Length: 355
Ligand code: UD1
Image (cartoon, rainbow, N blue to C red):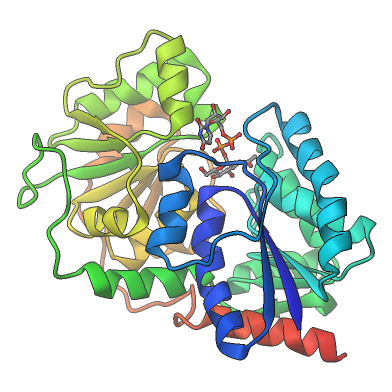
């Protein structure tokens, strides 16, 4: 079986890692296409290095642009790639512009399409990611769902026959990395005592970074938290704050560059809580049993909220209190699978090939 993976943004490199490992173990052919959506070393290269992912076979180097231009540039680059490699399947991951571009290119060339992390819904149609994931699920021949909730969304949209519950591949990676970093000390800036209380924060979504009053309100709330807040600043956050003349380093907030994946996991593990608008980090916090506060009006990972480990605090006036709330009741629940999702995903694709 020959699979061509299309990836481009940071969370997709994490999802690719266990899939690449499985395909290699089975002796399948795997072509990796990097669209170039993320291109900074600490947003891309370090993930390939730390997670042992083979170098991309093709790099489209599209870079940043408006959504239409960026997606269009990927689409324009993909025809040639698919003609050259003629895979049995194109595999796309998550919900970014790279996902929808990879999906469209496959269906236009008549190549079977599988979507990993299918069926997630925020029901917020202002999010570009919501459109990306709905369009991709409906284009896909095979929807590989991470959770029962995602399966129910797919069934509701008439996609039950093309859907398979495989579990969450980010859980595969997290559980493995957690065990390898457990013995190290967290790498924190000198101003933060690793044995004391601190929080880990990330913010990158347009709804939080692009409105100056909102971003200023979030930073002000974080500044008042009762322990240091390590703010791992995505390039978009730094760029918007600079344009808005906003100093991110206020009060409790300690600004740093995004961390490589193992260092992020280690820092989150020892933290008193995570504050984020990322999807992946909400789930990683839950798996590490660290309370999470999500700076959004909704989440695709509803299980984290239902089990009490994640609180939505879109209203900045509620943010500081949410962050410092007491830890929830312990739980043994495992809604994201057992750490073997990638093996199931690859088997489901192989079974699809045999049909
Ligand atoms: C994208 C995904 C989002 C995902 C996030 C993870 C879409 C629509 N969104 O958002 O779902 O959660 O990746 O990070 O695809 N930039 C750099 N260097 C880089 C990458 C980006 O400086 O390596 C800056 C550029 O100014 C760019 C901005 O960040 O315009 C936004 O990057 P972009 O890839 O468009 O979207 P993300 O916000 O990262």
